[in-house]
Image (spheres, rainbow, N blue to C red):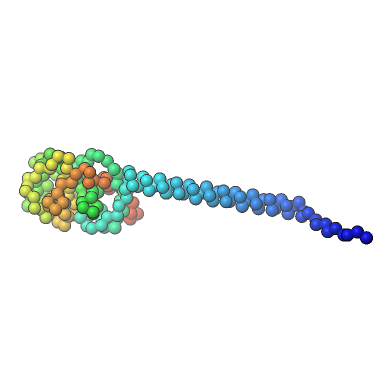
Length: 195
């Protein structure tokens, strides 16, 4: 008698189809997962690049710009090269980032009376964004002429703001300015354009 050969039966066709579908699903799932991860990495890199180069995002510290922007709020700025009266700008002073409002530009004359009224080139400023006027911490000689390529800036909370009225900060140069503050993103209750 000869040896008996062991014969293994092939699995039925439906089981083969089921296994094939499972492998195809696993392959598609893996492909979609990789694609999603790569897309998220690219989007995050672009977001970081945009936030760094064109639209820096800042969190406000301190109260020198209340009531316009308050401590803890998160704002978006837009890089630019020319600034006019009323623009809110973020700028570097030493190793600190400060936020103030542009009051006057290169060559203009600034004066402040005892009640805190601000005059630029002899004209009183209409400042609806401040809640109360104050002379503040002034140690410069008034009237004061803004230097070339400089901006005179003041905080909206005039009584407490350290700004161009004091020689410690003085007028700021265009190179110091990071950008114009345009938009508030947090808290959501105050989400929107900043005036």
